[in-house]
Length: 138
Image 1 (tube, helix red, strand yellow):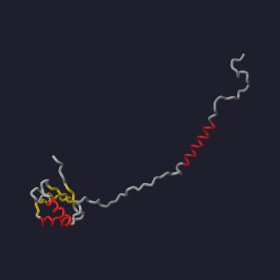
Image 2 (image 1 turned 135 degrees about the horizontal axis):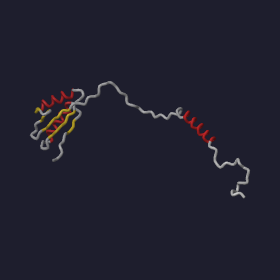
Image 3 (image 1 turned 60 degrees about the vertical axis):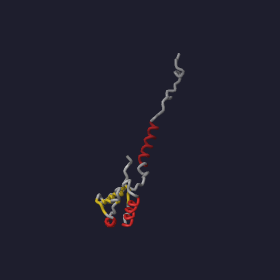
Image 4 (image 1 turned 90 degrees about the vertical axis):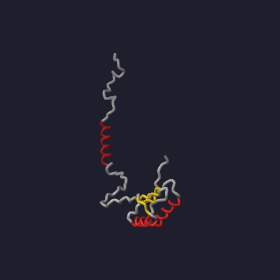
């Protein structure tokens, strides 16, 4: 008496496992195909890279500080100047290459008319870059 229902069968060729050899062969062939075709297909992104040069870098322009004090005195780089001397210094600074930046620092108590005169002289003299220097409230 057999305990197994298939014990009496003479079918010894029946296998319960899948034969992996053909699957492995197919996978290896696909791997080789992909390894050959991927270098041929190039996905390149065009990028404009910066070019190095041996030219001298552009120098930063000089700064000229003009202070207008509360009493109306005008200081050019901490040296007192008169109206005519201010116009002459502005004209000389406008001829320099690169043109310097004019930093205008006015006292809170000075009349706006004096500040406007300095700005007008700078524009008439040919200076194009004027910056206002302020101090925070205390």
